[in-house]
Amino acid sequence: MVFSCTHRKPIEVKKHRTDISFINNRDVHFDILYVACDSCFPIHDIGYRVRVKLSANEDSLIRTIKKEQWLQLLQNSATDYAANALLYSLYNRDAIVLLYHRDIEDWRMSMKEDDINYWKGNLRFCKENYKVEK
Image (cartoon, rainbow, N blue to C red):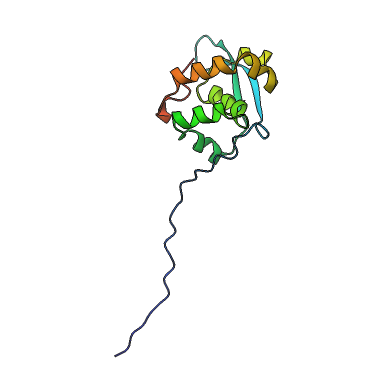
């Protein structure tokens, strides 16, 4: 009897990336831009919006973060400011007030508590719900 064995390549399982260490105050880079609705007629201004510089993978990953985890990030002094900027971007929240509180310490003293209360009441679970505010 003859047996023939060939070495099979292991099946690669796509891992769902869950590392959110990129969400930290030290590395967050964002702009606050004055934005217009160019698909509306007539074109009109919709206000100031946060735009965070993220890779495609990071952008995809932040859309899967659950409400409880966002609230933990907002309470952590190493991630609070970055998490808040990401949420402003995800939810397309008007960011005019952030123009006056660009410094982390100033934001913490004057706005952090209000922003956390806002997010507690407005975070949604479905990624389809992001960027719904106009």
